[in-house]
Length: 119
Image (spheres, rainbow, N blue to C red):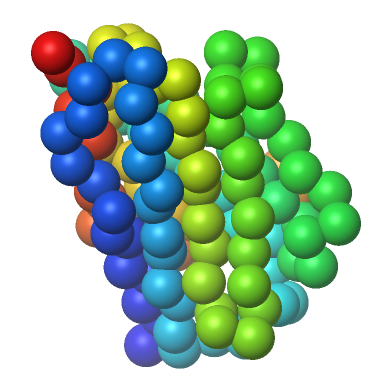
């Protein structure tokens, strides 16, 4: 059974940092590209970032460039998202998802982790 389990969310003040993790199991992790997608309250899904199977290529939505860093540890079957300089508009539930290639259809999703940026 494929499982993606996010963690690391929480309440942080504007300008602060958080590191999200996504633990993967039930599939060959390094056969897949991975992405982070978020959903703010009352809004639709927004793609955040993606990383190729070996971590050699990374991609970001424009508003996240320079603030967020995606990475992966294939030995630990874990995906990460380092978020710095957080803004109130980053408040959302953050999901990780896998896809055969970057930009491909998402096959599996995690349950999400809540990030709240507020003073």
